[in-house]
Every structure is written in C-alpha cells, then in structure tokens.
Image (cartoon, helix red, strand yellow):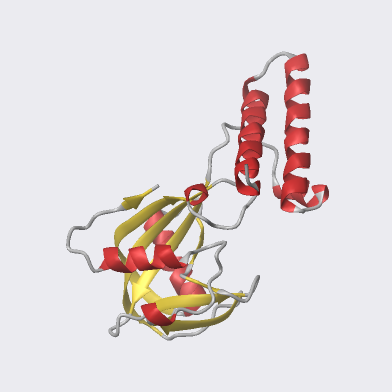
Amino acid sequence: MDSKEQLNLVKRIKAISETGLVYAQDPYDRERYEELKDISLQLMAQLGNVPMEVLKDFFLPQDDYPTPKVDVRAFVLNEKDEILMARESIDGKWTIPGGWADIGSTPSETAVKEVKEETGIEVDAMRLLAVYDKQAHPHPPAPIYVYKLIFLCQMKGGELQAGFDMLDAGFFPLDQLPELSEERILEEQIIALFKNSKSTESKVYFD
C-alpha cells in the first residue's frame, strides 16, 4: 500500500470519528471518537510530514456530517485555442483559474469570479465539463477530500493581468503547457478538458 492509499484510509478514519462526534450522546462514546480523531491527525501528520499544530489549526471542529470540500475551476480558451492559466504564488507553478466554492455563490458564479480575480479576464460560464474526485486521479497526497467542478467559460472582455495572490497569468497552447501545479490540475485532465470543450455532445466527465 502506497502513501496515498494510506492517507485515504486515515481520512476515512477521521471522517468516521467526526460523524461519531456529531451523533454520539454517550460521553464515553464521545471520548473514544475524540481519541480516534486525534490518532487520525497524528497519522496524517506523519504521512504528510506536517506538524500536528498545523493540522489542528487547519481542521475546524466538525459540528455536522463531514463531506468533501469543493474546488471550482474554469477552462477558458482564446481565439487561438490557447488555454488561460494562472501562476500560483504558493508553489510558482501554473493551473487553470479556480478555488474553493463560496457559500452564497453558485458553482458557475464562483468559476466566473475566480477567473476575473486571478487573471483579469471576464467570462461567462457555458457548461459543466467535469466533476472529478481528486482522490481518483494521481494528484499529490493531500489532507482533505476534494471534489473538483470544472466549467467551460467563454471570454467576453477584461484585460489579462495577474491577480493580487497570483504571480502571473497567460495563455498557453495545449502542446506547450507550463510546469503545472499538480495539486490543482494535471496534464491529462487538461487534455481531456480540451477535447470535451471541442465536443458537440455536451458530455460531462465524472469521477
């Protein structure tokens, strides 16, 4: 079993412990679930080489049934069929624009907002291209479970410029992609999204 499979098992243990804490009434059961959650965080810290204090600060107390986080991204092409990308300040690598879903905004609204904030380009969301379970793809191991929603968006204006939290923004042809931030997007996903964006079938990739 590799480290990614081990981390996924630890995430399941953590989710089970948090579900138990939401519904448990007996104080002894709650104590056991708290201990199970603490063990899962210790294992996660060891597997991810992250200090326990960082993980405890990252994970807020769970008061409802634990569910995956939602990452919303936009796939945008210009008139040359070049792909709009932003360079992350966190790792200095490139990704298609996007971020965590916002409470109070629809998924497509979040995609449109992220493109504007990260690249300066104004777009309209046209259709959903993919719903990916991040754990089903060879992304680097991560402490949280994530679903990724990716929308095809059409340019309508704006001026290309990097957002305040981005290092750069630009358009790239499919065969000349920059170094990718694989925490956020993979080359095989971009190739599949490009193919789907050109399809007349309006199909949605999933899982």
